[in-house]
Image (tube, rainbow, N blue to C red; front, side):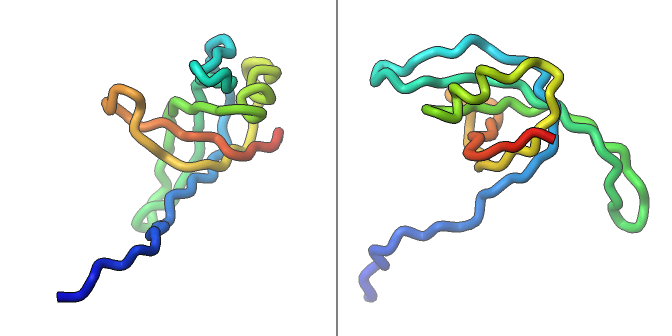
Length: 106
């Protein structure tokens, strides 16, 4: 029987989303003193699916750590941004959250 590969497999998990910041909790810190912020993003767009136009509207929880958290904490509600990051389970595993790794204002 062959030995399992020891290389870490890195399947794609990247999300690029244009959204409005509609909610934000105060900046907090982990026990290791790393800044963390939870934000709520809202997205609306018109998408084509099977040749038909479809109105899409959603809200997505997002989180930022470290310097990213500090940058997100300075944003006013209502600002539109283009966020990039990866999806993971929420702390209680009852949903998903976008871990924002980059963003730019639109």
